Length: 357
Ligand SMILES: Nc1ncnc2c1ncn2[C@@H]1O[C@H](COP(=O)(O)OP(=O)(O)OP(=O)(O)O)[C@@H](O)[C@H]1O
Ligand SMILES: [Mg+2]
Image 1: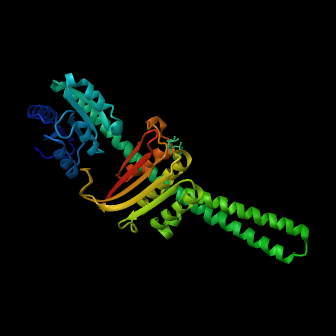
Image 2: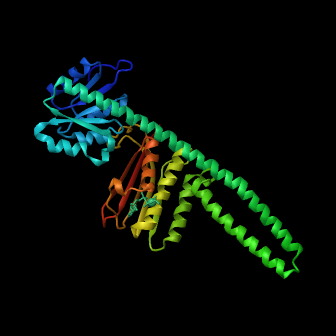
Image 3: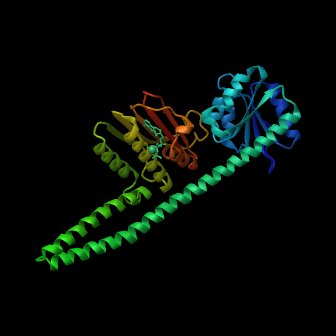
């Protein structure tokens, strides 16, 4: 490792098992005022990214033990530029189009590299990295704003419409009592009472969809248990089992909402599409040390997995609807990782990891 960061200059991590390449790339970058930190393998790269802010990583695609694609995966959310020899053009194309990296895989450089070409490509990549960061910030702001808006709306409906309905119900009951000898009036009051009941149930559903209010009063554990009990009643041909372990009763409200919504969306999908016989939902809080070298491995980790044994589907970005995209975005906003694994005929697995101190 070399060099400390100068204020306002970007810091780039160069990961290559070849010492000469590391030194050439870092020299080029530093000649243009960019801080370069060099390491020779993926494990060191992960350690650096854990400790400090890295604006961009340049990754050799072919390295022993952990290749560039795997390093890129594990240093999420750091954006990357791949580096490889011209004779390995196929692997570099594979790396740059790796789906799990999404837009974080910005571009690639082919060895041998010239100074001008390197600086030009890296400056351009830094520009894209900056835009990605802005988009992430925007996503965070809009997700929070949307959640707050939904919560306010649900309160408004509950307090205003709900109260009015109770008023109508009480008044109608009173009318029915004082006119109990009038069959014609009774018919009408019964109808009003039935309508009020239907409206109350409908808006109860809307309120709950907008914001799972019970989370504030009953807590996440109880709400999930209730959701799964309801789900099992509705989909009797399938059995969903919920397993919760570790301390999850004092999570921040936005984490509660994210977990609740993720399970809700996933269970909706399983009910609608999976034709599953069994679903296992597991929510676990654990120490993060053993966490496969992810960037947040030193913290506590909340792990949610939802596995069904149904038909599965072909995961393609194009197939993702609002449900799955929403899950991904919510998890991202909390700095976590979201993985979905599914193959036709082989069920679907969703795995969410959320780090926290
Ligand atoms: N557990 C699952 N088993 C089988 N197919 C699934 C499963 N989950 C999702 N899918 C498939 O993925 C698609 C996208 O799901 P997603 O929740 O993103 O959108 P949607 O359910 O179609 O619409 P929305 O959730 O916005 O109402 C679904 O249309 C379905 O084909
Ligand atoms: Mg859905």
